[in-house]
Image (cartoon, rainbow, N blue to C red; front, side, top):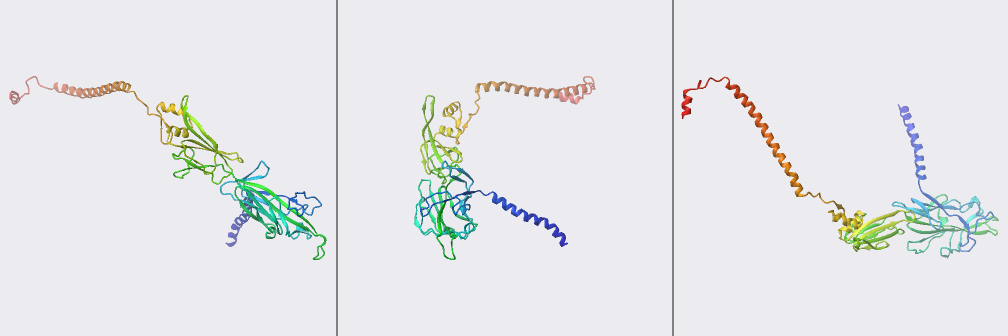
Length: 413
């Protein structure tokens, strides 16, 4: 019995063990990852300012210290300057991590090469003054949406604290421009005798890159100034509205305001304002507002129309999109505007004279129909009675016979 159960379970267990790594591999494959940064020879004690190509005579030739990886984004575009722009949507968390590929005590499996302790390092490009860089220093500097360059975040002795072969997260990123640099010094000590180094060589190296993070959506959220409730497209806000960009700092927002003005054909729409807007802007003047948001990296555009005020014609213009001239014409023809700003057709009008004329023949027809029905009933009732009476008269005695004297006396009375 046990053997039979085991035979039945073995295929299931085999499928389970095979499927588990396969599912994991698919999950990893679906993760968005972008590799950044190549090392350059930055000279020696120059503030890591040089960017020399690593040639064959360079001790750093043909091997890589590690790689920076950006993950957690939805898509990536290129900026006009050529650096990557990572687009995120709700739920995304963009991460920067570094994977150390080398043993920092034996670079490229060479005991003579190691990452040196740079006790007098500086970074000229990112504005880091001379300090003890230790065994590699990581620098991250952000420029925000107001084009303000923030103070760089400096992680000294960075390579000493991470594990070879592991992806070590640096930090999470929100919208902005970012500059990243890893400065490290390599000691080349091929003539080392025991613990004594004989004329070792030193070189500075720098891995640097720039990237940007942007929201990938293209949404602008208008809110009622009184109720603070969100307004959808073609909404009515009697007292006005304000804009909330939901921390999407890099969208292009424009607002157009239209009002009614006298024209050759009556009241027509007239543009009174058409310009850029920013987060928190408030609009309370009467009119029809068209709010347009665009995202330069996705090419997407979102448009919302909001009506402010109590003019029903403008409300219908905002809701229906029809020209005001046409709305006025339809109102003149009998249509009305409901509370939602929709045009409603007038109820059908029936002329009274026509109605009277049409109802007279109908009345006569009804009367004739009733009379005909009565006549048919009478005829159907009389004919049987006549036949019955006729049949009864044939069996009566001659006049006077069969009539009693009592009947005659009764008649005299």
